[in-house]
Length: 314
Ligand SMILES: Nc1ncnc2c1ncn2[C@@H]1O[C@H](COP(=O)(O)O)[C@@H](O)[C@H]1OP(=O)(O)O
Ligand SMILES: [Mg+2]
Ligand SMILES: [Mg+2]
Ligand SMILES: [Mg+2]
Image 1 (tube, rainbow, N blue to C red):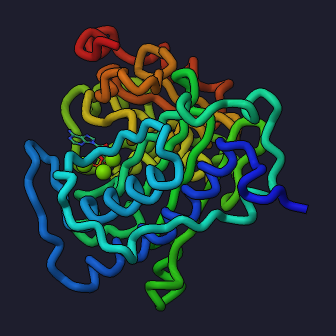
Image 2 (cartoon, rainbow, N blue to C red; image 1 turned 135 degrees about the horizontal axis):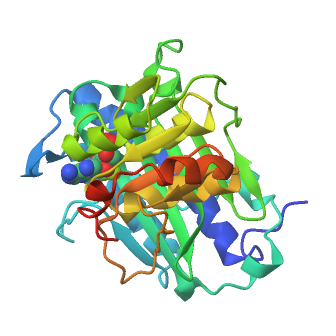
């Protein structure tokens, strides 16, 4: 018998609300694409923002802050608070599958004000503007005491090659320490080959130097931090290697939480764990190194060239 929503621990309710709201976010992303005008703003070098990024951030941040006024929510996009937030974007339903789970003792008593939620409303914006739609994910990461302990990854265009009704496409993965991960099946990557996944739209000399040092048989250059971690979980790549300063805590919080629960490992290029306190620097200045299995992480870390590490102060 599922706990009634009010009796459920607040972390479980935040996770449940996050699952509900990302599904609404996915529909906004599809509606903007279908409208045909993406409302692209150029935020800086290789750093675009579309109407979907803006609208989804309003949807997620407003929905969660209405239900959980004491949590800290940090979203990628800097939006003016007067930005129009449509009533139809406000989601206050809770996902019953999540509420049915038992929250582990050590998390059940965490108070709302200790929770930091990291929101990437649309990860893979560059690929979204170029029509590489299955690279797009919506990321909601949940952190307590600086650690990523849970989160949600929504992939609105998942299975778009098979399912032709765009509003039936998509999947949502969610999970929390001590509960597990749902919505995806962990698969081991092929043996006898080394497949590395990395950026498609933010590459540079050091990114490629580092990958070469790891002697891959194949390099998958795709968009999105969330998308690349999905490739690790589904056994399509052995490691995600991004020896650059480009991504931020909202890119890695949810993917790290789910990958760690499934036995993988995500750190910076020095092997340092990432911290997710609300006042931490947003930039992942040490880069991102993630492997499908924690046991192989050291093999990759020790092959990061010294001259590259010097350019990535943790
Ligand atoms: N140089 C950069 N400037 C802005 N965002 C970046 C940069 N590098 C990476 N990112 C963010 O990290 C994600 C992973 O990088 P990549 O897709 O290149 O592998 C990107 O989708 C982008 O997130 P977002 O699309 O949410 O802005
Ligand atoms: Mg961005
Ligand atoms: Mg991102
Ligand atoms: Mg984004």
